[in-house]
Amino acid sequence: MIGLEDGMLQIYISGEGAGEPGTSKADKETIEKLLPNRLEDQFCFRTQDAVEHLEFIRSDRYGDIKL
Image 1 (cartoon, rainbow, N blue to C red):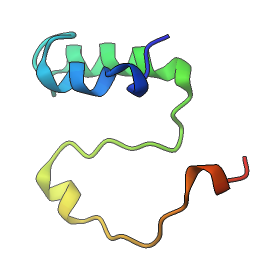
Image 2 (image 1 turned 180 degrees about the vertical axis):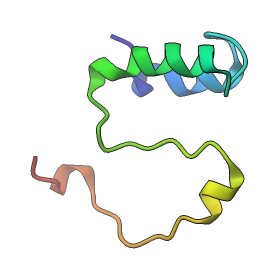
Image 3 (image 1 turned 90 degrees about the horizontal axis):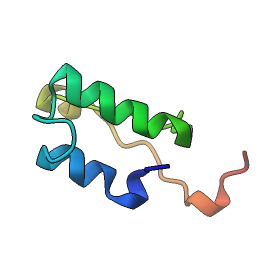
Image 4 (image 1 turned 120 degrees about the vertical axis):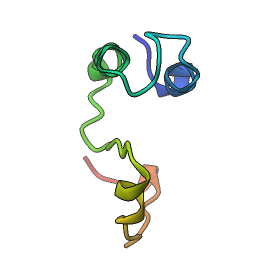
């Protein structure tokens, strides 16, 4: 299983994985590799406009979250 801890994000961004980041092929293959990790609480903001609409509300330490 490949996850963020294995450098999946760096592989995606560099284009070394499935090709040019942002293409449907690269997105689809990367998401398929990450799905087994059940990253249900993670989001992808693909444009600068999307990032600029974010507002910080709070931060929780991972170890403090009760699932």
